Image 1 (cartoon, rainbow, N blue to C red):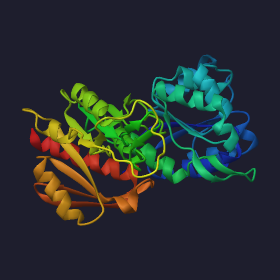
Image 2: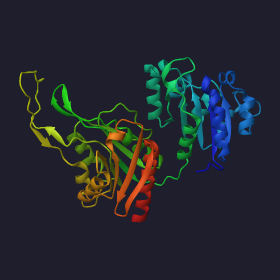
Image 3: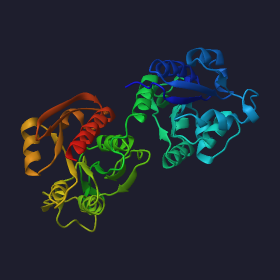
Image 4: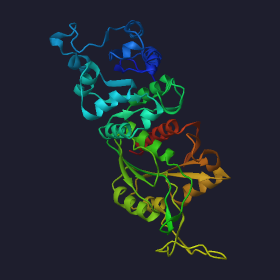
Length: 396
């Protein structure tokens, strides 16, 4: 996908990762984007304005009082014709400013005064990223609709290891490409379930599984990127809510079922990614079960089949199931597709993908088999939603 004619303002803040902004500008310009660069004073200590001007082909801006802008209103004029403001790297200090609406230089004032969407790529020391204040600021930005890209984990300039590295320019570039993709699901309501469920045995023990929720969260994000109104019904996971997505937290299969019954009724698309427990304890103990000699027996009863219930409605949404199999992938996926009367099923080998950031998915529907290949879960989620959008169009 090219970015020909797309108007982007790239903001650069102070940090060693500022050098990566040069490669990011190169990628954007090579793809045809019109890139305007604004830098904080601290950013100029790490990379020169001459470098950024040469790569972008445009003057670089850093002074709130720059006389080149009419009426000294650079914070207004510089963003008004832009379709996206991207700040990469975004320091902890700059994220704090954005979260609290503070603006004391050109870039922060420009971000507060903008009319277009904002995307930020954090870059900082691992302890700074994990600091409670930074995490609160990140969550505030997400709630305000700001898309946060990364950060990544790895070695840092200070010599420490951990989360905080700026996402690599090629990956940020990919996110920008998808930001500009056609909103093929605009006007559609999509409900996604994600994560495991927990079925209590007693107040401290549960029956659960190893689902990380990563695939479901990637699907919710991809649906939102495609323009849909998205509700994410999530089991207990430690993942940030994708920007612009409404999240409903549940614990048990029955709680997830009740949430689905409420939200899926008027959905256009229902995507069941959650690893819902098939069984629950019939009579969970009100008190912690003490260890005793001999065996412990638990009587189990079947949980509701949430996906089958949605697909069985008189006028069901476009239903997509996920099949995490340990063997006979195609055979089991096709059987599930037919049994539950689904429009589409995405299948993978659970033993190869549980908890990982990548996946290998094959889609099955009435027309056959559609391999998506192996790749990052977000990339596969985007391919899945592209396939679903095409099916919805052909349904009209």
